[in-house]
Length: 133
Length: 255
Image 1 (cartoon, rainbow over the protein chains, first blue to last red):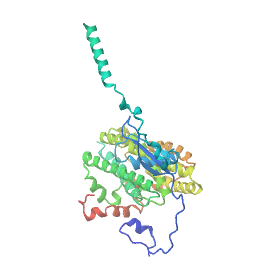
Image 2: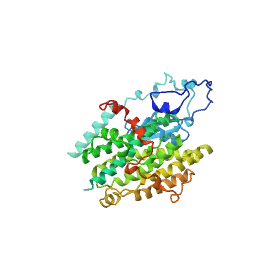
Image 3: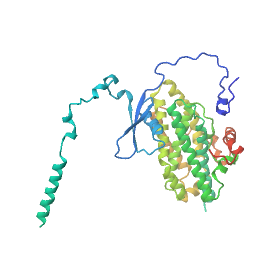
Image 4: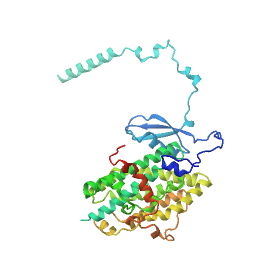
């Protein structure tokens, strides 16, 4: 007996309806390696990371990226990068990003330049009107 | 003037697109890997769109019935598709080689049609150029990958698929009684010229894929002629029945 399905393709495939063979565990690395995909929505934009996919090489990763990530929305460019080629920090090193509260002097907010810029602009305008007169 | 010739040309193009779209869509959900399943299905949908656009031109400009009626109510003798597109999907190597050989011909045809004096046809050719460029890019990349960069088995399966599909592919260029008239009117250059450009396009890709191009001279190509006159393989009518199943139950169905 083979599987009789509403989908004629499945019926045609002639798959035994009672397959008593035990399921064999998949080998490790049964899949192709992964690639990260970046797309650009318009010329001049940054390329943004949109997801990943499996592919056997860079060319096919690009071929697949176009249909997986650029078939529905506006896209003008696409990059693929082998996931293994991305250098990153371990998650346990996240504390590397912690900023010490006592480093106020490094915040741009510490500078008071607004009034000096206004004074400079005023001075320029005055010099211009005097020159014209 | 030229109406019969134009009708015949557009029907050939549209029927090829419709039938290969349906055949390739048979892989949906059964593809070799998720990414490829999505890509191949999406390509099949594009082809369906091309068929619909062509039937629309026939409907709007040349007095033919609406696209659904033309697609779903004709019997095989009324179809003008070539034998290559009618064949069952076979294994993935066959489907990929067919996709490559067919889409390379499509690229050449539409490149020529961009200059066609039939304005809606020239407009459509320009509009779908990008889609066909992607389809061919997809096909070429797989053919080179499995031919030259896979293993012995992938190479052998691609070569065997090529040997099977190539004679059928020559049937795509079955000469038409309208070839001279279409060329003279600047509508379409004719099948002889298209076949020549097609060979020039596929040869370097097959060489890169380390696949042996069968000898054109040694093939009796007339074996696979007839599709353009309504003589088809035994595979077409059962496929048409399956394709029109929903339409026959409910002609007004939308999905």
